[in-house]
Amino acid sequence: MKLRPMLDLDGELIRNLDIDNLPTSHGSHDIFNETVIDSFGQSENENNSLDNLSNDQKLQNRIPKLRDIKDVAERELLFKQKIEQCCRIHDFRNNPFGDDEFRAAKKVTLIELEDIMLEDPDLILPFECFFDEIFRLFSANIFRSLPPNSNQNVPEFDPEEDEPPLEPSWPHLQLVYNLLIRFLDSLKFDDNRAKTYINNKFVLKLLNLFESEDPRERDYLKTILHRIYGRFPGLRSYIRCQINNVFFSFIYESEYHNGISDLLEILGSIINGFVLPLKEEHKTFLLKVLMPLHKARTLSAYHAQLAYCIVQFIEKDQTLTKPVVNSLLRYWPKVHSTKEVMFLNEIEEILEIIEPSEFQKVMVVIFRQLSRCIRSNQFQVAERALYLWNNEYILSLINDNVQTILPIVFPALHIDPNTYWNKTIRGLIYNALKLSTEMNQRLFHDLVQQHSAQKKLEADSREDKDRQWRRIQEMAIENARANSG
Image (cartoon, rainbow, N blue to C red; front, side, top):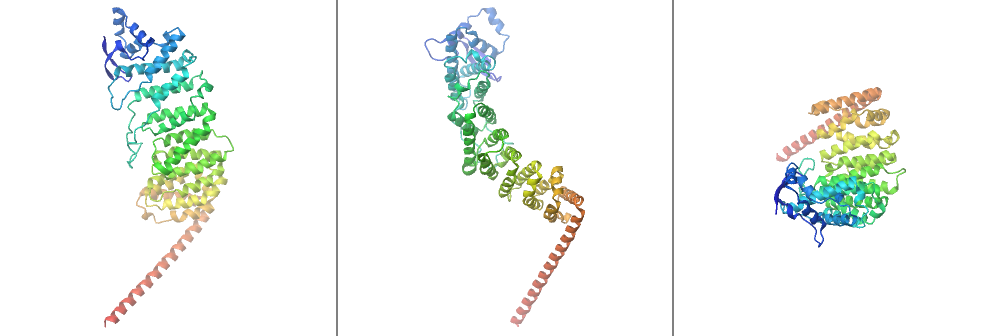
């Protein structure tokens, strides 16, 4: 028996590999095992020449290759045995260093299958057992129970900054995902045969895996689901429906899901492909499913993708602007400055693609909200709202409707600069006032006069109230003295 140390495909040292007893499938006639054993009958010179190869290459040279088997029946049998090897699941989580030789052989076999699907799929596609066997491999490795979310009850968990838990079995799982993608992309791919296997049940299992905490796995799932959506038109409605269900569960039940941003990214591509005019079901999806996602406390994890989807809808149908804006204002945060800044970002994205006719329908409610933001005690909110005056297109919209907009925002802008301690805010307010003056100097002057008159009335009213209170106090003191005497 020969024991040789080797490295796995990631360059990590595997404990001594028993190359005379590589893992094989069970059976009385085992071509896989026989070919491995035969490959060890090498001369001393041949063994010496192998010393110059990497350990990975040595293992690959010892495992029989499908390309080397000329007889179709024997090649099909070897293919089945390789699938059997790849269906063996190794416990990386609880036993990270066990079955090293089996794990290494599985890696090499998965790489070989991926290479064949990429370069020479006709080598295995004609096998009668091909679809049964390849989907058995996919199901055995990909579809599994996920561990409980480790960060579900951690309110401060930030996926952008905190390190997510990674899948221990990724060295094998990644190769299986690569094989599935090669399978879907194959030019020789038979869609009709695959429909038996890639069905509603298969899609639902894929969607369930978006709960994985490992972002690497979710990236692969995005690619695979997008491929399926494009290749199988009959599954498109079902995929959208099941994504809806995931969102509903997230909004109204769990409020935690690892894959919301990834699913929204897929939807962004799907929405981009919607034909015009938009179907009513798509509009309902926007208002009843996407917009309520703004309520979640974990909005920061997926807001960029959500905003992209919403902007895509408005670009396709401008009449959706008003219901979207009204819905956005309904969910506007009251005491969460970070979320409020995100909402302001989204408002700017909407304003940048809005048509002037649609802008007039929403300008009053939008600039009332912007006025409240400018007055905010949170300088980040005030700053973000004032930055809208730096956007050339938004300025053109304001200029065309200055008679309506300026009276709304003027009270928020025309204040004592000393009331803001932040120098940046003072500069932005000055800039907004300057631009407003240039748009309509006469209107600006009238508003200044009205504002001054209003301030004087308020001051006079306040002074009158103070005078009355002082008189009441004096009367109370006089009554107290009279009663005491």
